[in-house]
Amino acid sequence: MKKAVTNQLEQFFEFVREQGVIGLAIGFILGGAVTKLVAAFVQDIINPLVGIALGAATSLTIHTLPSALQKLCGVTF
Image 1 (tube, rainbow, N blue to C red):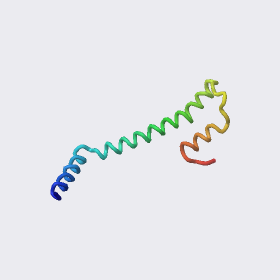
Image 2 (cartoon, rainbow, N blue to C red):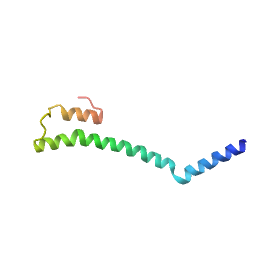
Image 3 (spheres, helix red, strand yellow):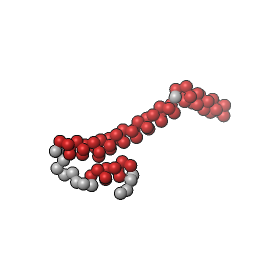
Image 4 (tube, helix red, strand yellow):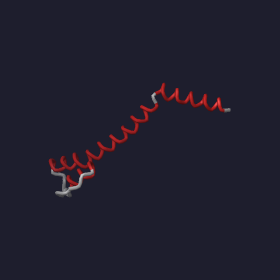
C-alpha cells in the first residue's frame, strides 16, 4: 500500500517537472493580473484623456485623474 502511494507521488512529480505545470500556472496568474492592470489603466487614464481631447468628457472633474492614479498605484494625495 505504501509503495503504491509513493509510486503515485513520484509519477505526479515527474509529470509536473516534464510538463512545466508550475510555469503554466505562474503564467496564467500573471496574465490575469496584467489584464486587470491594463484594463484599469485604459479605463481610468487613457479614456478620460481621450474624452478631454475630443470634447466628449462632460462629467470629467479635476479629481478624476488623481483618483484614477490612486486606484492604480495605491498612492494617496
